[in-house]
Length: 275
Image (cartoon, rainbow, N blue to C red):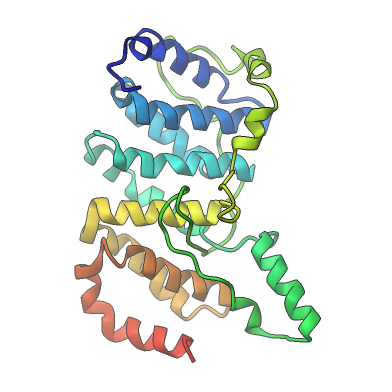
């Protein structure tokens, strides 16, 4: 189904109003499904969102920082979806200075990350101490259906997923709350399902989004990243250093030419971490 399909054309405005009406729900599952709905519209009918794009980006930027990890995960899918839609890229570029730090923060291993906990448990069983926890399986930033990536500066903080979008006629936060019940419990199973390829996490999703952004905006994205990368190259926390390396991997294709001037600094750092 495309945005030109009669069924989509007949109902996408109503669908959008219904989704946005639920954006301030206290139920994290509802907020996550709102973000899923916005991403679906961006895929199927991007022109419906285009007149409201500034408000949509503001909302998804706040939702990507939601204190509920699932909400933040589903919201972070939006950035790659935007880049793959036929929408003017300059609309998103205006928000890049605010978006990039959010993605970098969300790329860090959370303290309760299952992979991190499993590695620590294995180390405890082997009697290891120190930085061995950093010896985790790497990820490749390819997107939800292909795998993932990894880590940086702290888990997503308490966000503003209930932030208001000033869109005439979209209804208030209380409107349509009961609509969620009709979705059924099966929808919960779809959130974060990665078809046996390992748990799809906020960390992986954010790195994948950064990969897509770097291939969209190319070398002009690097100046937004370098101050953070340089700070974390010398960070005492191994998780920050690991995230720095993985970030370099995520942007290596899209920002490849721009990063060449930094190779005298980057290559010795990576080589040292291989020892």
